[in-house]
Amino acid sequence: MSLPRLFYVLTAFTMLLVLHAAAQTGARPTPQLTPEQMAKIPVVALPIRDFKLLDSGTGWASTGGQLLLTTNSGAHWKDISPPTPALADSRDDRFSGVFFLDANTGWVISAADTDDTNAHGRPVGSDALLSSTVDGGATWSTVKLPRVDSVRELAGGGSIAFSDRLHGWFDLDLEGSTVVQVGVLFSTSDGGRTWSQTRNGPGVSTDILALTDKDIWFAGGSDYKLFVTHDGANTVHEVTLPVPTGIDPGDYPTYSLPTFTDRLNGYESVMYTGGNGDKSAAVLFATEDGGRTWKPDRILSNLAESSAGSRIRSTVAGSTWILPFAPQGQRPTLLKLRPNDRMAAPAHKSSGDFRHCDVSFHTPDEGWMNCSGKLSSTVDGGSTWTEIAPHIRNGVLTTDPVTHLPTPKPLKTIKIVLDASTVNRTMDREYGAGLIWDAEI
Image: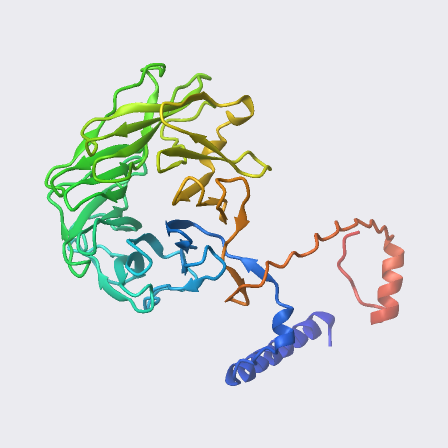
């Protein structure tokens, strides 16, 4: 038998053996790992995409496909993910919006594949689902969110916020121009059991803050503008704040979602970006009348040049403006400004690294920070940090520490030079003379 034919026969026989073994394996139950085998599996930290500290020690974290809750500052986590829809893959990043009023009451927007078509006969692709819980994720109720009578399909995203247990809003992302980022606003007055499209909305994809059942704030779009309604979205208008003294009037403002300490007092951070090498600046505005009027409260200047639409990551706890600073390759730190502060960022903190971490603080001392998916907490205002990301071993939550694997040694490159006569003599000796070998040396 010639060598090529022998090769094909052996290959086919091997494939039959593999298929037979697979069939036999599929017919048997999955073997259970012993404690010794389980202990050898590495422990890894879950990468966190979104999170929120709700109260002292209590907060939630989402990987995009898994939702978790802690009530003891991350010492223990509980998987509270809503059930996976029938056509969805539990490994997909399916949670596009998460909102909790407290540790018991929360809502999650997810996407589910569908083969349906819309009113125009075009494939819908996916439906938006809303899951709600009143017992901390022990049980969930799920409803399908309304479809939009549009030629646009669901883009798979959305944001959600509630002012109380009954009144809520969600902004549904639709496919369209990446410049426009279309969004449609819906509201509920029964805790999310039924939804209706509002009379008006920002018209773009936004984040939402529901201060009351009438006062709702929106920040978003491709260039992150600010919008507000004071009548439950019967009317919605864009908010433009006056340029503070010391800021170039030609600089472009990028707005963030405001923070309120009560119905009247709140803060709004704005990033001003120029061009042609000009420095950027961040300004925190304050309001004492529910956002009807705003005044500049503190300024952080001497930031690196950035493009229009660039946002600075920050939060306000009490009256302290907290900004995470994460220089490349260094441990993240915090910068804090108090009322009426005007600060020029130090030279080593002006490189634009205030945009790479997210923070959520309950008090000026207690808070969480997420940098590149790595979640950590502090109880001393950022002097020390503790890594609190949920840990898993073989897909199961564990409190065991993360396994630190040794750094692999670099492979050595060995150069072997063979002449054709040596190769031919070796082949003849091992496989028989007279065979023709195709080889490049």
